[in-house]
Length: 401
Image (cartoon, rainbow, N blue to C red):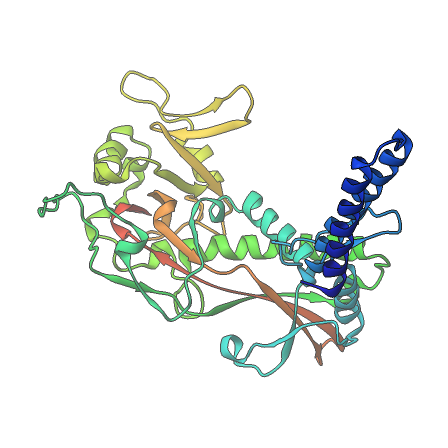
């Protein structure tokens, strides 16, 4: 108890004693009694205030308690420094003029590209828009499974493609062909996109600069990713579906020129080769000329069209063949039937979700001087790898004589 509070309690006791003595006297006016009671009440109020002060509370000159403003709650969302205007401006100066800044974050690329050059991290505003373009333009990339597994780490296929079984059941169905005890690992491959600095020379605003960068990188990387998913070598790029030697030999089918335009041949040699458990979500990949020149006009024995364009109410035309969606691709992704040599892949029948593309979708950029053209070049690099998680749900179609 503080000294001030002890003094107030003593004053209260003395004032109460005086009030009681005053009340016992004869002829005391009501005004005197009210004054005495008011003094007692005032001392009691001071006591309550002193108790609050002793507890650490504070009051203003009018005796009103002062409540401190609550401390702002910590923000749960971490600020993205790569999206700030300051960083975006510094990155634009770096890409156009080679001007370094303490604002920029530089990272070494020697582990992925065998170079010791430092690269500036691309701003989040550009990266997010590039990813949107890749996912909207790259029909193949948009359908594969996206992962962010650490490169070089071995991951069990069971973790990527789980299977549900009843408790106590130990027998695995023969139709479950994927080896769940097998493992899969991903490497670090660099996908680069070079942009001549002269292309950016006339840009004067950040919005113009970012728009050009987004369009150039998005288009180039979309094309490269689609090609890699289909036919990447696997040594310096992701391993493509058509070069994966784990695809069962019985599901690599060569169609003669006569069979290629025969619905009966497609039913027996292509559709029937796909295990039932993999047919859900399966699609065809083929060049636009192949579909329009050979598949779109195909009919069955009764003259009913097999490959046709189905028009929805809200969506645009959707190509289909035998009830399966056909994804038309450029000729540099899959050969057009007319231009393909015997033995070339002209079509793929699979569920693209069984292909895994591993990348954190983070890009860096550095510039260098091209001595042959005497101009600076900005190079954007994306680190990625990919391969089939389950090769048993793939049927590869090749051109035969």
